[in-house]
Image 1 (cartoon, rainbow, N blue to C red):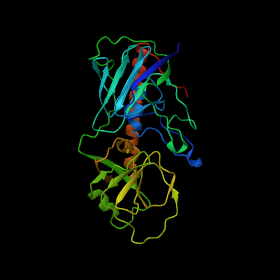
Image 2: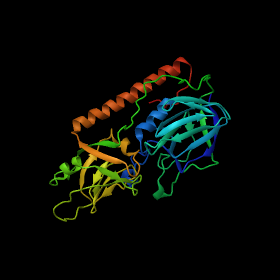
Image 3: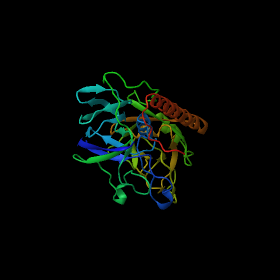
Length: 331
């Protein structure tokens, strides 16, 4: 039986929003896909609590905390360093039971920009064109603030977790973290990769994320090669992950909130499997690129998808064994 639980937000950090996997079929209307910047971390958070991968959840920059009115099942992924249930430190990238009236706090890591917090069930949030994802240009902010009361419809009715210093379940969680000071991103060639010298410059160079980066695009300071002529490029459609060479000495990697057309040379495309890396970069972060072929890009995405499917199957088996509900749509 489903019930409605209230989450009283105590601390919303410096920016917390409702997110999901983004809009579908809206780019023909000129509305970008949007959605979680780190799609992998968001998917894992939802899977861990038995939700659909694309269910609404919280995308957090900074600290975040809330107190539930009833017991809830929660998971935090992404750039989260520590999770506290009351005074107890619990596992990250794992499901955890939060008892009614107890505060859960999420403390950020310095090794990333965004944390993702999923709650078992359906988070009630407004939608725009079928998604809870914000779109500031359309006046759809979706920001979560201190003092907000968020409603969640859930079939979770409580499950005893006697020892918070032990994981509730041991699951095959595909955590993806960059451990080096310089983060690596894979590229496949774009239509303008034939600009003389551009491929060599990009792979030989180290780029720094600038403070002008946002959800529209990650701006990277570093050496670039421009076309030999200044022929005007007709505006054309550009996908998420397109690497543009604007007029200045920088690269721009277009994010999920980019405009859907542009008029700069496109030298490459960040592979879908490594786009979540760029969802976690912060100003000053060093980034290097490497060229891969489309076969490698497809294989990397398949391996990532396979790891998520293994996790989904494991969660279904474990939840079924202990009679915990799944909040997944059929079909």
